[in-house]
Image 1 (cartoon, helix red, strand yellow):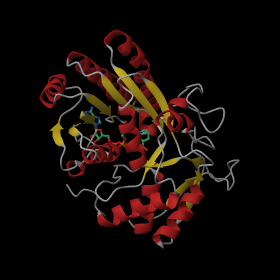
Image 2: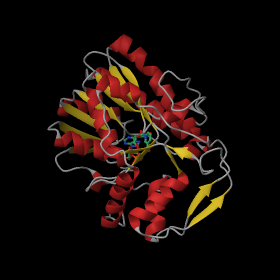
Image 3: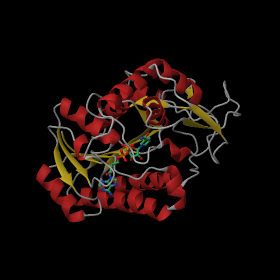
Length: 326
Ligand SMILES: NC(=O)c1ccc[n+]([C@@H]2O[C@H](COP(=O)([O-])OP(=O)(O)OC[C@H]3O[C@@H](n4cnc5c(N)ncnc54)[C@H](O)[C@@H]3O)[C@@H](O)[C@H]2O)c1
């Protein structure tokens, strides 16, 4: 298939692109590089450096690439920033998203896989979270992703654009070429590994008085390759139907302390921690159920073991201590 990946120079998008190219798909990466890295764009993919809001460039990319499907990863995704600067999030996650849909419609591209988020659920009433659970986002990030999701059935009804929205929490891990390099870094595993490497003083734990097995928050981590495979698998159903799927590690998830302990074993480093106060709006448990996508699409994660996830990220960081070195 000829696939355009928005945000394909970012963390997850680069791995999606890598897997698509490996499978023999023709890929155009469409990324403004405002957060991504030129060095993350996988060899074998075409690269267009432009913003989603540049409708003319986007339509040209669709026409020149004879695009058949879009995997939409480009977004802003910092929870805290989304609350203090909602305008930025509505603009990039909703307005730019709708510009993408308009260009798809105009160029007759009718297949979309959307990288949504489990932040659409807000503070869940039960664990693990299922697709039928209520969506009450507690931050602008989750709200803007949900707003875009809500447009999708209407665009399908009127314009025939089918979509699969994938809702998940924490992508983690790396491949040999692609790894996680956000600035600022807000994700736990790279923060822990920076502390292991000595480029960060310590890992801050936000609260150890939660009603969990060791008092720290329980979260869900999925290897980025498993996430990428789910995005590619989702392309297969778009000739027939639209869907929403969760992706999660299921089971009991992992506490913050368990992740730190696993990283100590993998890296052989000490990893200092500092225990601080709880952050407002951090639920004790956030774990998504993958039962539906497993049953309906046969998705089966290959790297579920937390040590494997951390090990892949650690290897990547050691090979790329300065990130992509642009
Ligand atoms: N990282 C996670 O744990 C996680 C969890 C759930 C959902 N997601 C979603 O997955 C997607 C990718 O996340 P990531 O961690 O790889 O993010 P990232 O910041 O590494 O990548 C996003 C990419 O999109 C590009 N981009 C952003 N806005 C753009 C625009 N208007 N036009 C063109 N390019 C633009 C950036 O330059 C960047 O390369 C996002 O949609 C995010 O909401 C991520």
